[in-house]
Image (cartoon, rainbow, N blue to C red):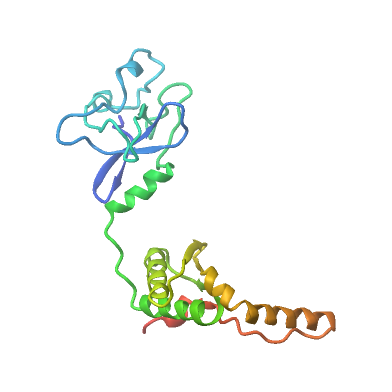
Amino acid sequence: MAYGPNTIEINGTAMLLTTVSGGTAVHLTAAATPVAGREAVPDVYFDRNDRVPTGYDLMALRERRWSDRTICGRVWAVMVGGDGGALGRYGDVAHAPTCRRCLILIDRHFPQPAPDDRLALVAQLAADVVVDRRGFAEIHHVPGDQQDALRKAIRTAIRRRVDHSVRTHSINGVIYVECQAMYDRHAHQNDHEAADAIDAVLKGEPPPHCERDWIISWETWGVA
C-alpha cells in the first residue's frame, strides 16, 4: 500500500504535518488557497534513493497543494514522515502536532462547546467567595470543554463588583482564581485562622474546624 501525504483531519479539513529547519516541533500546514502551493516533499528529497521510502505515493507527495507557511506563520521545510516511514535516514515519524502555537490555533476550527447549565451559577459562587470572603477560590472537577468559558465568566462576575485585577488558571481539571486586592482585604481573617490552627498544634490539641469555603465542586451543582 502506498501512502499519501502525512495529514490529520481538523474539523473536516486536511492539514499536513510539517517540520521547520533547525526545529524539532511538528507543525500544521493548511492547504493553499486559492492558487496552487507547495509540494509536501521538495524535489531535493527525490534526488537520492535513500531519502523518500518506497511506501509513499510519490506523485501525491509532489502535488502542489500546501501553503508555504504553517498555521503559526513559519516557513516549513518538509512533511514529517507518517505511516509510510521517515523521510531520510535521520528523519522523524509523527502522527500529531506538537507546536504549542499550532495547537492553540486549531481551536478556531472547532465549534465552541455549548455552555453547561450550571456555568453561570458556579461562576457567581466563585466570585462571591473571592470578593466577600477569601480573595481566592478553587473550582474542582470542571470538564475540559467548560474550563475556558468558566474562567471568563468568573473574571466577568468579579469585575462587575470590583475594579481589580483577577487571575485564573487551570491545573488538572481544577480552576484557580486569585485576586490580590481582595486577598489583602481579607488577610486578617485568613491569618487569624492560620494562627489558631498553629496554636492548637503547639498545644497538642486538634486544630479548630475551618470551613473550606474557597473550594467549590462543579459536580455539586449539576442540574438533574
